[in-house]
Length: 322
Image (cartoon, rainbow, N blue to C red; front, side):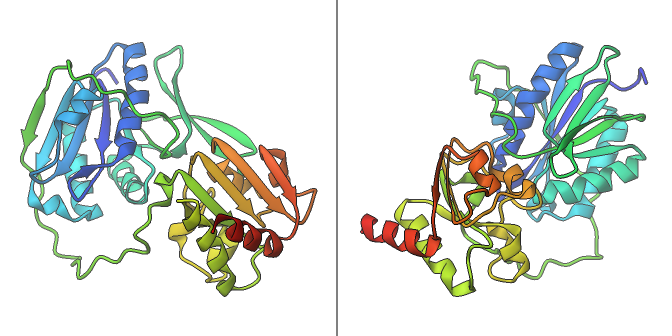
């Protein structure tokens, strides 16, 4: 495998704004690259107007900027074809992608085309004594950690958003941007008619989240959770049970199969605390739990807990905030 060299971070962008997960990947990748004494590079696919220099400031030795208007729309096939060609030509030994909605769809396509392995939703990465990448991810609803090694190169992994802190900016770093033309420009099997957004709110960026679960009896009662969240300057979150019941969209879902959040304050209202939900919010700075069941697992990780009926407590909190 001596022909493979370096770490490649696939930088994600949306509407010409680089996703913050790219800076988190660079932070961890810089640590890995230093331990292996190999270069750390970024591949960015996008159009004019993206601040590609920021990737250099955050730690990338070289930013390969594949520039074209075809990347204005996040179409997996176009991205996959171009990234695969780039990887085959440049042969990085490690490829890292953010486990965002788009990254989770894109990464397995790339891995399949390269006939290599992929470890999804990693929470940590290490280098073993032989210089191989050890990919660490939770398994069995976060009850154990799996340590995975890829037998083929490149070694590929997706990493959960907000798992690592962002790389610090160093404005003294050398700017090294190499502009590339796409390898592949046309794909006529799909056509984007309209882009639909579930919500204008990005729950993953909220500093205050007021979440609810099975303690809510009917869809209309979500209004009191939304009202409390708004009065606190935060956003509403829900457990998977409410999404499955059709009460709201997955844009608000917190948990292993939903969004991972790390707000300053997380208020869990009528959420028992199943492992799948805890996986998405347990690293919040301050956790407040309200539940009628004193033995609910949520109390085991809460900084403050109150045993009571949310239908009595939440309206009183709203009145006190008026």
